[in-house]
Image 1: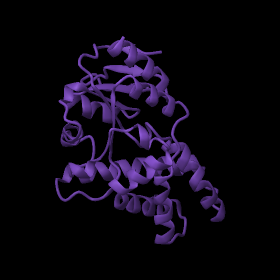
Image 2: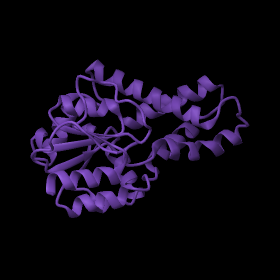
Image 3: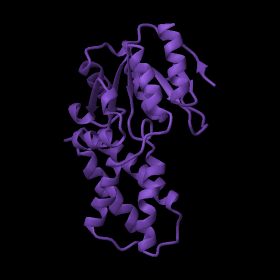
Image 4: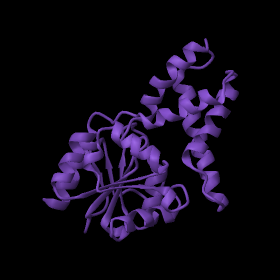
Amino acid sequence: MTEQSEPLTGVKALMFDFYGTVVDMQGSLIKAITPYLEAKNYTAQPANRIVTWWRRTHFENSMIDALLGRAHIPYREIGRQTVDYILTRAGIPHTMDEVRALVSEIERLEPFPDVIEALTRLKDAGFQLVILSNGDPDMLESGVQFSRTEHLWTRVVSVAEAGAFKPHFSTYATGAKAVGLEPSEVLFVANHAFDCVGAKAAGMHTAFVDRRKRPFGNEYYPPTLVVDDFADLANTVVARVKG
């Protein structure tokens, strides 16, 4: 059920986080790492916990990089550092080739089941659809093709163009500029509260996709919309902007 707090005035484009919002990062990485852990005879922690360590540590390393204000480290390199760390933490002997193979699985994530139909409806309604992702450009190109959504996007923007990871304000400004819009003309969509907070602080409308049924947790930059899934998103946006 949709929660609404603000009007969607003047929205011309929907801008999406990719990893975890359009594609199921947690589920897909669990499927990818499970046979690897089985081959290592590793049973100390379940695969879902290892993937949670992976994602949380990657996020922490990305935020550290953004806060340092130095040269932007590529997403793939952050991933290599992260997977090496979590396998070491888990006590799993590994090679760097194995680490790189696991990181490459990020380019093969399945979309959530409701994504393609909802995006198609939004595109048919006349909205520009844009990805703004922390992924490297080549990783996003592969990931978008694998997700079978490449025909739906007006533009795929990597934060490498801004030289910082989200939620740095420059990333959202770069995304809006890439499609010739003001931030106020964009509805940013993510299932991560931090991403919605960053986009809202940068002047965008935001939609929090609450698939996991968790509180948003930030009263200073509340989302414009809270929706259950992409079907709910499409129904709400088409009705409120085009209706």
